[in-house]
Amino acid sequence: MTDPQTAHAAIHARIADSFARQGMMRHLGAELRRVEPGLVEIWLPYSDKVTQQQDGFHGGAVGAVADIAGGYAALTVAPEGMEVVTAEYKINFLGSYRGGALRAIGRVVKPGKRLIVTTAEVTHIDEKGQEGPCALMQQTIVPVPTK
Image (cartoon, rainbow, N blue to C red):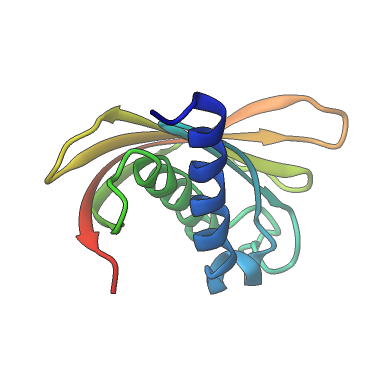
């Protein structure tokens, strides 16, 4: 039987290795901050790579970080030898922000063999540490064999 600390370290390594291969997240400057079974936290610092025409965080960047956080939360509960892909997500944008960073926390709502349902909460954190709601996402993930 594997002890919980070893299992947690293996899950973290699995997610960190996959995250390092995410070209889009590297390009945007996203950071993997926390990995737990059923939960992943990613931060996206403000930069000119994530803005729209009015200098706020672009909705595409917000959606991408939410999608990745939810997807990796799902991967923490997927069996070894499996990857995950997004089948669909729905996102509500709650506020527009510039500066600071976005914190996306993905959580598994319902694990499953064929479908995994997740949610992600995206919060803006300004330079003074003040937090504001940015977006909420619900997502359906499909486990697929690793290629």
